Length: 125
Image 1: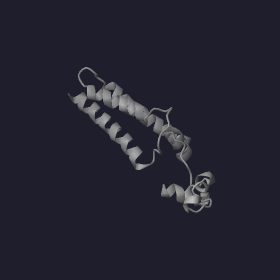
Image 2: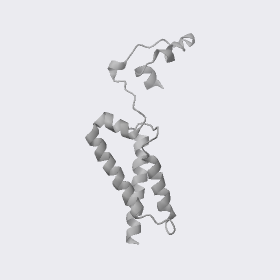
Image 3: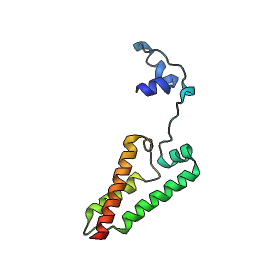
């Protein structure tokens, strides 16, 4: 809340608190306030450009392809759970948090890494 209050000011949000003694904020957009588009793919496209979006799409496709090729629901139900979790995390039509923040990227890479590790271990079995 403090980062938002200090750097990303919308007057209606701060004027409403003036009766509590919280002063009205000035506009700090020149200090780098920029909201993300709440979608991984739009955020990557606006932050890094369309070529990097294409690289990310190819990478996500390869992750899911690796999980799909090793999918054996009957013998390895964990693999199905991981594949579904990765599909949900990488679903393109959704509202998400910022992909470049630690918690969000941590969940993505934890599940993708787990999916790939489980896929490789099933190939050896």
